[in-house]
Every structure is written in C-alpha cells, then in structure tokens.
Length: 301
Figure 1 (cartoon, helix red, strand yellow):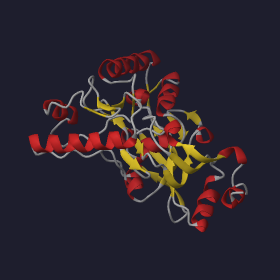
Figure 2: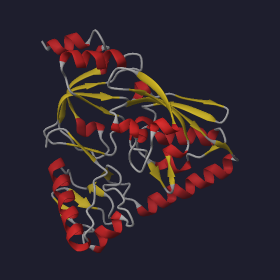
Figure 3: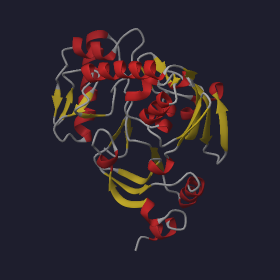
Figure 4: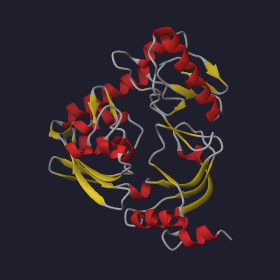
C-alpha cells in the first residue's frame, strides 16, 4: 500500500490520482518518462493539494496541455499537477472573456469568434492552455496575450491568491512577473473588441493556413524550440548554419521550418536535448549568436 496515495485521497478523488504515469501521454512532444504521481485537481481542490504537498515535502511541477516542455527519459520525481479538463471553463460577458487555466487557447479564440470578439485570432493555433500561455506570455503573428489581458488570478508560493492587472502580471517576450515569482495561474479575463464575426473567422483562417504551410504540424513537437534572438530569427540562423533536417536518434530539425525540433521516429528526451545543444553550438560558432531554448526541461534526463 502506498501511504502517500492513501493520504492524497483525503484531498483528491481517487480518479484524479495516477501513479507512475508516463509523461509521453501528456506532452505535445510525445516524450517523457513516468511521473511518480500525476494529479488532476479541481479549482476548489488545488489550494488544499498544494498545502498537503508542502507538508509532505513533495516537489511538484504544474503543467497544462504539455506544450513547450521536454520531460526527461527518467521521468519526474515527486508530483505533476495537471490543470487540465477539471480547470476547463469559459464564460463571456460583454466584450470580456473569462477562462480558467486549463482551457485551451484555441478554445478561447473560438469562443471569442462565436461572440464577435476580436483580439485573440493569433491564439487560435497555439497548442497550449491559458495557464501555461500566460506564464510565458504566449504569442504569434504579432499578437501576445499581454496585449488583451485585463486581469489574471494567481496562486503564489506563500499561499496567497491575488488578482493582478496587466501591470502586475508583467508580461514580456516569452516571460512574465508571475512566472518569475513562481505563481500558478488559476484564471484570467481578456478584454476584446467587438467586430464582425465573419472578419474574425477570415483572419483566423488566414493565420491557420500560414501555420499549416510553414510549420510541421503533422509531427510531434513542443512548438518553437528556441526564443527569437534580438535582431535575428532563430529559424534563419539554424537554416543558414546548414542544420535543416539534422538528425539525432529520432529527433530532427524540421525540414519544413528550422525553428522546430520534431519527434519523427520515437525520439527520446536525450535525442532532443543533444540535438538542441548541437544546434546551439553550431549557430554560435557560425554567427556569435547564442540561441536560448524556449522549451523548458523538466524531470530527470
């Protein structure tokens, strides 16, 4: 009998607790060893769960849809808290949309279009959730979440829940003050502009066609692998270094878009990490520009 699980059952229902759960089933990279404990709390259960884990001295990682992360082949010691389907809720009031952390950004963008609200068209093809998207201030095609954010409700490490405005959120390119302070996004409000739904759908269709044409959507990936270096584009630097199509094990620099590393043949995390390190060193040697990963490394490699 696992005494930790027995204690957990006082905080979470049994169906929200999984043991030795393969993380490859919960990441868009389709890569990752087992998490000791995979937990799926509701909004009401989360504060009690975090308090319990702290009392037990258990480390934890919080994930949403599992995009933008690479989980090590040896998995994750401690717990993974997944803010997924039990954190999935959207509501609309006037020109504002409120969404919980586990809601997919694509679903929020769709809901906005159905209500003739513009401003989230850029997010319609982003694979992440609201919580993960706000932690990193996700963006695409000239738009970022900070641009349309009205407020965000956050659980901080001291146990306090605070609702922050745009300034308190502190969004920047692929980062935020909330992330810096170790906050967990619970929900958010986006303020949008009323617009003809036909025009909104047309814009979303245009952006998604660009994604389909330019990005390797048929292969598993974590999205853009590297951050955009100031004054440069990561994909061009990688392609100019002759690395398009470069392979390590089952991982490859996409032949369609060099800014993506893809899992094309049952890649393991070490394949991806070795490939990324090679790309970083080759680009630096050729240009003097050191690429920074956008993908977060989690767990034991």
